Image (tube, rainbow, N blue to C red; front, side, top):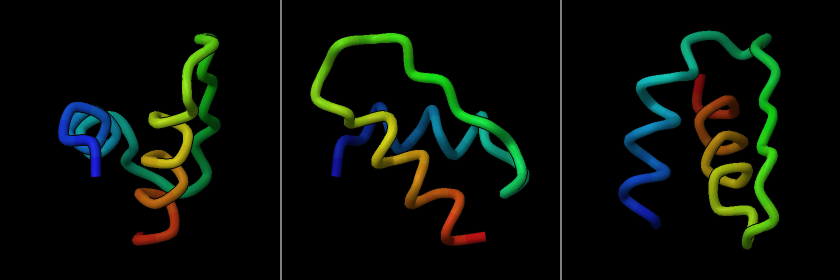
Length: 41
């Protein structure tokens, strides 16, 4: 688990219907964390 990604997605995602846009070319950490956050609701 990546703590910064976990923190940001938990603060930023309030509803499962929200769309996520990750405009970076990284490892997908924020997308995976966003997916987990949306599935936990």
